[in-house]
Image 1: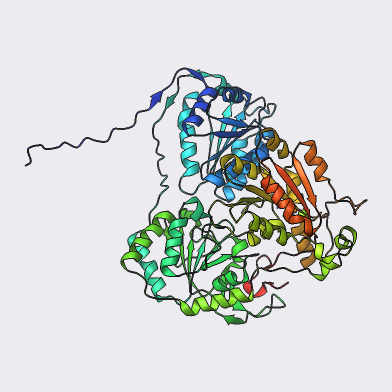
Image 2 (image 1 turned 90 degrees about the vertical axis):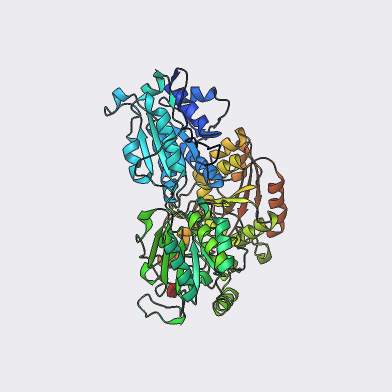
Length: 622
Ligand SMILES: Cc1ncc(C[n+]2csc(CCOP(=O)(O)OP(=O)(O)O)c2C)c(N)n1
Ligand SMILES: [Mg+2]
């Protein structure tokens, strides 16, 4: 035995800390500060003004006043999506709380860490139909990861710590904290826990080596593997591991819209994104190339086979990706890795289902591959894909519909060379920002084109309401992202319909000096619905025109006038010759800026696979 035997000390358990006597509101704010919160998007009212009073005393937290609670929730989401840290929003009871619901649902669908705090009527009034009482806890139950109605002031520190832990770990999501006013006003000495654990909650499952080895075996046997990756890669901070894995194996990568930027879209192995409006070549690579069928009842005639192995990592087989789900990668072996066991076999059965943190799984796979590299090269498969890529890139042209359009006649006086197609505008933004901006969007055609014509090189670069598809998301999300990343150019590429839904946030931008930019691809229509009307309803317009029917020649509303009333700079661009200069002026401006780009409404987003249909029904040529 050595002379100096060392006695190992047990690691010191972190101690809870006791604070001075404070009000419930002050305890809440102190807890937020302890979680590192630097910004809260909060709109006051009777049931939450106590908390605002406490916030005015905080030296660490910036309170941003949105002009609508929905804007606040989306801004908090933009903050969260741009950073990976929980975004925090707050509203009063009743209408304030219900105005948060869309943002909470959005965060739930896209797995965004969000803390939504609501003031509630005093406990003694709950259930009495009190003024501005709504059961926000009950109302949001299906769209939260977890929720709390605090009934004891002494619970506040634990609840807040748990809420952040739950929102930010495992599969991230929204957590609601409903805090009655009497508890905000009560006094107590807080006990801040140093650590918490939640029984039954295991946020970091790890794949076994056995299962991971099986994946390597499957790759070795495969001829036509494809990686299909999603938002899970981004929220799991696994982009670097994914890049290494793809390069080490030589497997091509397609992503979901949520996964844009998880793998650089400029990389030769990238197939860009797949699904309803994704690249034809990604859809073919996954499900095979088929003769285009005229009718959905015709048989599917295969031209070339698709993937024989689909590595589905951090995805959920969303219907906008799969179309008719049993025809999606019908012939391939499916490996599905997800951190959330409830996603396994939910939409599409997997041959090899693995519940795991994806960063761990990919990291471990890379270690295994370093020791035992894959000898196989998928040369023939990559050649096939290169051929597909060459044949069916994203593309657009000035169609006859555009040439014959009212826009062309009235605004452009027939000058074809001056028309600005929405796709062109996005390509130009891509070029002038070197592909480095953070892009947010509304929902509609412009959203799909923003996915297609801007190539995302980094995770957390494309912030879009994907699962819920909530119009009005773009500009407030850009505000949140810009607050979080003031060093980045943040641009909301929006539709006129979507932008109008939260246009009041221009006030937030101006007053709070948040230099988020907005480009409105203004087609005077609810373009995506118009596209469906054209395809499935013989072009009959069912309330999809946004202009003034009594004066169709004028652009309505006048965004320059609207923006100027908010003291926000705005320019309108009608002619192609003016576009580049205008975008550059917008980029050079260190204030909020709106660029109203007038585009025809006659364009359709292609490729297009109708909902619930197959790759054989995909229309991909203009
Ligand atoms: C809150 C909300 N209401 C309705 C819809 C249905 N919807 C989807 S796309 C769309 C049209 C959007 O128009 P706009 O924002 O102008 O974009 P565009 O398609 O013209 O580019 C509508 C109404 C939605 N997604 N969200
Ligand atoms: Mg529109």
